[in-house]
Image (cartoon, rainbow, N blue to C red):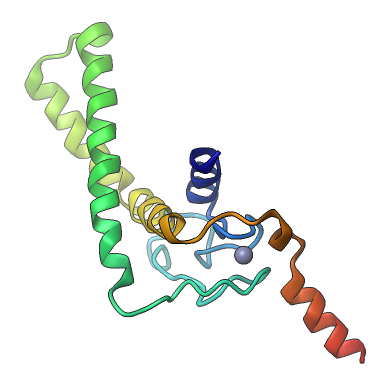
Length: 138
Ligand SMILES: [Zn+2]
């Protein structure tokens, strides 16, 4: 259950707490001018994404794990199905890492955030916005 929640949140740019608000300002990771811009807090549940200075240094280890997984998957596929020479495979691997790096950056940060923030279905009703709307009405 945690794994599916983490994967949904990480690959969908969604808040780990409510799965509604976006973590990064722009959904497209290949918008290279803005790919690293994060919202300070969730627009739905108010979860704070800028937790403390240096918090996202831990995402580097997550990035390493994701890339190790990518290596294992692609190396296995190459070994059993494609049978490309090692040099050709390595060129493919390093080019694919470069191409995937904006995506890896984002997925790693949200995955790291998922280690500390658990999914709460009750928060998915955007209580923050409802509270704001009630304040505006009153
Ligand atoms: Zn949220």
